[in-house]
Length: 178
Picture 1 (tube, rainbow, N blue to C red):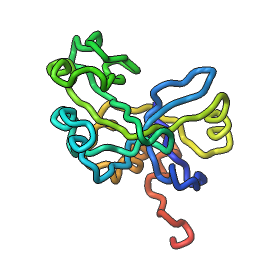
Picture 2: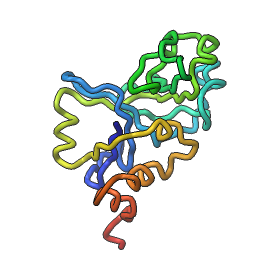
Picture 3: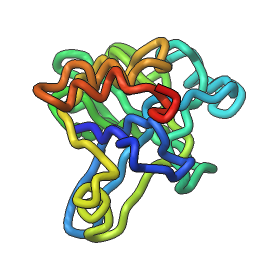
Picture 4: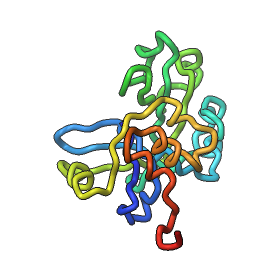
């Protein structure tokens, strides 16, 4: 599932973001922001992983929590779901342990993106933000995670939603200027 920031969400960490939910349970929720690439090449921080990640080969700003750590989201190759260091989240999409030697990942992962930090919510916090209208919860696709150009990701995901929700894709950034 994806979280799309609604126009009511004014927190600068999340304005116009698309968040991939990775784990939701009674203790809270964890996800990564998909549309905030940094300028920092993965190879400068994580060496050999720079040769494995999807283009653009940069770290993405996964969220405001633990920005000195990294999470790797991967699309496993068919049959690679049981590979060393891979934990499935949905079908072949999952988390890859970056302590796994990069050379052991060859052939088990089709696509990989690395995020510095994550977005996290305590017990009941995300549900409260959804209830107050800060987030739209929509189904995601693996391609959403690995887009080369993420600038229009929010609008493109919104555009494919059913009913009135799709109308938000055409809203101007500042409705008062309309």
